[in-house]
Length: 264
Image (spheres, rainbow, N blue to C red):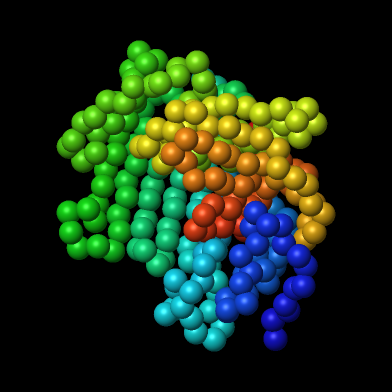
């Protein structure tokens, strides 16, 4: 018999609606209380985080509900390694079993706290559809530090960077950016402005990261928010070891399942 937890969840990731079966809080807290035991030691400069994806509104997936089902609808694996030229190479694998989406993103960032994008990047996305949108290939690069060049399949577009004074990173790079600046945001009450290339394709020219709150239950975590023009809000919770443990967006919540490695 599964254990059901009565711990009050923070509002930023509280989707424990009474109609949800399996129970959202039960599964989220089970993951939170177990991920640390699966830590593995690997060589410095090799980092890997694996997240389970939980739906915020289970009724939209109720057709999948069977006794004993896990609430999880997929996973996200974020791998990065540091090259000798002080670049971080990222490989992100995102799988959603309900939509059939399977995405592979590869990009490089400079070795500094904002993980600014550099060089070329590419992404391949497939889904369970049977039309021309079932497979998408994306390639991109920054030209002259002023423009972003993107190629979707065989269609090329150019996006002007509205504020090239702000560091430009990818949303998947935030899993390292937020822990790097977390202490300053929390202790000084300051905020940081960045530009974001969402999933390597959609430019969000000005986003703000700031401190949200701290909690002790179900485990000690510090929370941060990400707001931006044209960007849905998200909430990022970091543990004492500087791992992003929870990322809560409008429709889904990612919870750390296991991790290995460190940057130092």
